[in-house]
Image 1: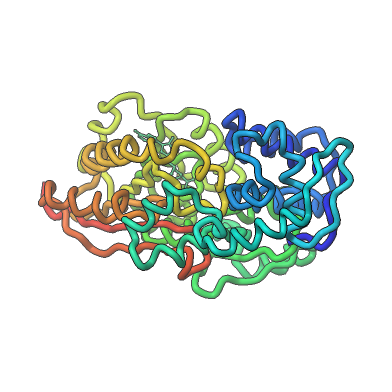
Image 2: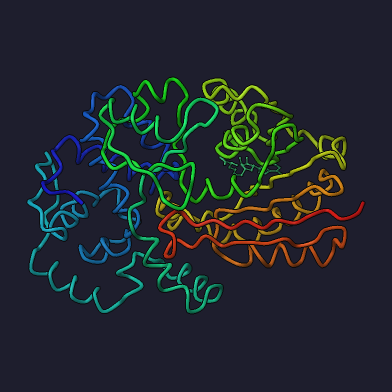
Length: 404
Ligand SMILES: C[S@@+](CC[C@H](N)C(=O)[O-])C[C@H]1O[C@@H](n2cnc3c(N)ncnc32)[C@H](O)[C@@H]1O
């Protein structure tokens, strides 16, 4: 957390980002890029802004409670919340040009009240607590608490271009403090606030920013050089690029999605990474899938999901219509696994993954699929819990096609 208050201009930036997210529904990453573009910001100050913004979003209901405002009043009363946030963390008030003051005595009383309500203290909305209890039972309280912590920064070393030790040496020369992650071969944890995307190492494609949990998912694909691999919900290619490295540039890696702009981003990233065996293809209709029937050694389905495993990184999902969208997402996941599994050849492997920790999106989907598709056999699965690993939360299941 901070050791001294935000400056007036940084406070304004925090308020602008939060207003965009909370009142205009902008995704957090876009609100950051919108507000940071064209502004000359020292990397440390930028990091401080994201620390405060992220923490407020992770515990928005708590901070609203202690300054006695509703989240819906943020646009008008945001400065009061930011002042309250500073007092809560034992900091002097920031010097904002216009700001609403907080009654320190009332704030102290409210903090004491909040301490008695663990769900509020963990920054958890009611709907999420009920869902978590129902889905994870006794594992939920630890998970709820872990999800309100700040995420760590992880990189994946691009083994197409270097190895982990030489990347660490290069990063150190560029002033980036980082260390190996013990239980994930490809991962590095960044400790300093360095502006990673300005480093030569990044420009030369030596690494990608990718959570260590996400790296475990791609590792489970276990793609080998020469294979035919489909990453069917590839997005901008976080996992595709990792799979490309496993394949050492040999074989065929088809990255698909329904959004062309994501595949365009993927192409740029693949070029920088030197991942020359990646081909992109838009899914225009079910015919795109049918044409690939029984052709792939590996099919990764990193399906659209609630994102409830990655709330440390994307805490804005807590304050959106995630609860209402959940049944729609579960239905979409079912459609995707039922239809896209056709691409796996006999003897090939289907890998189903989400960035959710909720069984309804995970094991329950897999169990239903297996019951209806005897052509597949269960191999193994893993829920990467935030409280256990410290990474973002993910789920992955591996299944083998044993017949047509
Ligand atoms: C969890 S994200 C993928 C993240 C990506 N694999 C990564 O590691 O960066 C899910 C992706 O599925 C895509 N998607 C949504 N509906 C789809 C569908 N019917 N078929 C294929 N992809 C779909 C979304 O556009 C999104 O990019």
